[in-house]
Figure 1 (spheres, rainbow, N blue to C red):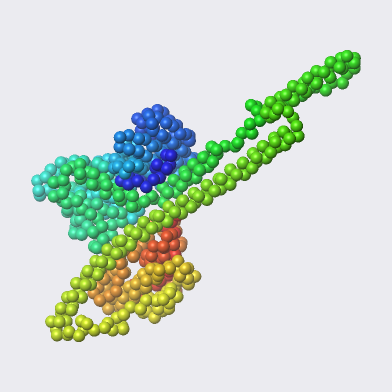
Figure 2 (cartoon, rainbow, N blue to C red; figure 1 turned 135 degrees about the horizontal axis):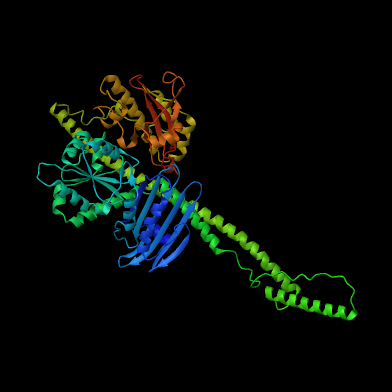
Length: 612
């Protein structure tokens, strides 16, 4: 019941992922705070190291602990009811030697009501150094000065950051007291504790921050700006994803409404962001643990042959001379003992009489015990299979959600591009009419300006051979796999756009129309050259990915590039969202040493931090 309640698809939930930088063996401190919270709930002192199910004041509590050489984990799940409906709290704490430790807390309401910041999350934040990225999570806003801006910019650009960062700007020109505004920000953001990090810039830092990140990404005075993970300051168009609550709204809106709105923004972000891979892995560990525990709880069937098993008394065998009368008395005594033993057997086996039929019945019951054990093993296997299926469906759901988010962003980018092109076309047509060239505006597009897409990935590789400045050096075995999974040719279409972009990039460099690298070219494409949506392009990999799986990103290159004929390639294009196999294209830009771009890999998704 508890698991079903927690796992249901509720909305407006509280879901906080907080990393713990307290070294190893910090779980007792976390358990102390959780125990404090449970005592307030009426459960008294509970042992968090033992699996148990408890009930107090109508609330149901499940405690599970897994400890082995790899990690120490505990999970608390509680369901309670009050005037606000049915509430479910789930807390998982993970401590593994040498790894990133964390706490994950969720609160959900069955009726879809708004989940406030739970006390247990506040207790944990107050007792442990919990954070997200480079900044520690706190209940109150953090004031940043000019010296803190390097940390802030790094934090905003961090793609591995899970939660939002809310930045409030200030100025000394308007006569508004800084401390008063900081206190107001603390009140407005009270419901994002654990979900987001709140920064208030002093007046000088506000101006310096604007100078560093530019007009598109700044946090103006007396506003609160919400920054998504992985801010790309080199892509001005992406600035619209980082929304702002303006001065007029903050001043005129009721504080409770502002607080609730910011809280909902943080909760919606957490829901869309989904579970981090490490949390998903540990939660599944607990689900398997729970499955085994429930199967074991079913237990072995009682044979029900009696209250207990006793050995029959062993009478000593004595050889001695005795009289016939004495021998008769002994035989009579043994006969009585045998009758008593037979009565004991009948009582233990619950038999009216000992017959061949009754003994066969006992044998059948014993055989059924063995059959039950076999059935229990089959049941365990079936539960394991269903668990695997559930996990695959969860992964597919995450992939589909990410694909939808990506598609929506790309569709919005495409609409903006179309708006720009439509405006440019109308302007050029008006220029043609003004010049008296009425025919050009309605004539067919010449063949050299038409785009003929490849029919397959093999055709793509052949067409790359005809392009100047672009060369494919990868393995065809990797490419061939894509024909089977790219059923709607979405990856093929994007791969062709990427190749044409690379070819035009080489042309722009040769013509002197581009003096910077490929990343700058894609985000600031010169007029008259092809490009690709910045959302499909990544100029590097994360440090964590390269540390763990950098070897997968070393691909063939000519000896003119590296004598070992191998080179590391981090820059890549995201070709399509196709589950865990979402195709990628890795490239190496050799400018300015060589006027060449090498495509070292076209294939399925390589391993990274999000790979299950």
